[in-house]
Picture 1: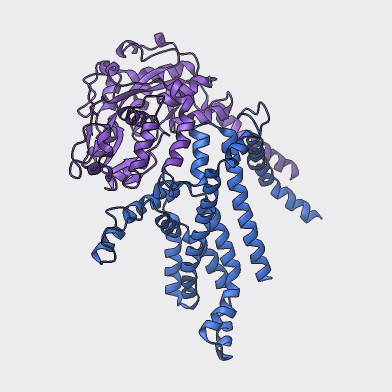
Picture 2 (picture 1 turned 30 degrees about the vertical axis):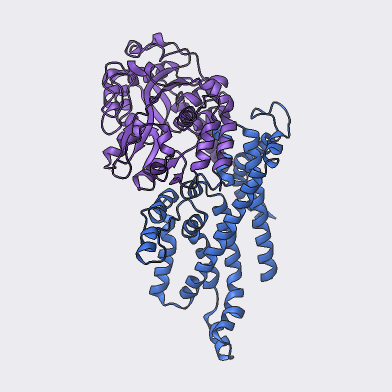
Length: 338
Length: 276
């Protein structure tokens, strides 16, 4: 009786180990992916293509960029996934924390389809994002630039969001620049926000902002083109505006997590993502992920004909920004708190 | 003795799991709060001093506790009459009250929180109704305000107050109510001297659950409360996930846990004293 119980206990303890070993057999790769449209699109398009073309099974772990960084750091060298998908801010943090395997673009068959500079020793770009102003044409006039957001006719419709995300940080820097600041001095943005606070429609977390827009709580926000197209496809009255000082753009990159046991499969996965037919499907209804493949049309709401034009957009030095970001986030909290 | 041994053996797997997956991480969390970084490379009080040295954080702590207390009061005020109705009602009404009180638990807290946006927002039911009924001249927008958040949390946390109340009052012998009436007590006196003392254990159990749950309700606080109401869970998330300052995040996590634990212990002690 005793013996059997022990045997049972031993079996139950050993079972997870057996399962893990099975999951890490050859021909598998685990990839972190953003929840929402990204996850839906990758499950529907990338996973079947990778299985039929390369015989590789991909398992997805839905996580936001900051959560991926936190998980990989907490795992201390035994990463829970082989591929990370990141925006520039978290990507720069990952470089500082040495979370990536060295990346060799020559191992990608589709590398030539991507503009030079978008594949480097850390990883490869898989999608672009263009950030600007979104407004509800039935409720407010078309804004022309960042200072308009703070004018009386607009400010009561405005939804503000802080610096927790890449796009939020970029927009607050752009607001600062419009009022005389720079990408290292965002004081003027804080001054404008503080003055506008009693009138703004909402101060929300970045994830809640599209929902508030859809519900009519805010009619004006700073956001990326992908969200605008997604909202539009669901019948929301929304249009994207390139501010008179130019739209900002950045690329979302994929990286092979340091300590990954599936490096060849991880390259195959990233290569599959960059292939022209896949990028084309990802860029279209209902996902609207802005492509980085030069042969693919970015779509009507994205103000560029091809990703080749990305150099013309406003970009930033994230390693420099990250140094100040903690201070800025803290400052934003305090400025907006009631 | 043999019985005890068997009980210990049966409890051992869960006990060991608790040690491995709860106690050990908790100790690592405590150690992190006293470290220079998340790899515990050196000891430092910086995490704690950064947190406690900023009055903004202490106000957020106070606001968090106040939010929990307000939700407890609101849920108790609304749950008690419902529980009384359940006590005196027929089987059909009892079943209806039970279903209505459990129903919210069957939908995700995310869905419930987002539904409240539609109710509290600018074009929401309350804003429209307040103007239509002539209560206010401009729409009453409760979204991103503290009263709105308390209102939503009251609905979201209600089952946690109602279920313990129903279960303790269910054990009250209905004959006691008759006895009280026969002896000449008014309805108010019966409520005060018979029903309320019997309800107290459930009330305290409910208060404990509601307080712990509402003061740490990260999703509802950020979705309904918005960026202008700052509570500890959102500060904790920012420090851990955006700024990567794990020592301070650990200090906030422990502060939140200890504060909630303190209030819950005090509630339990009061409950035991009043009851015993």
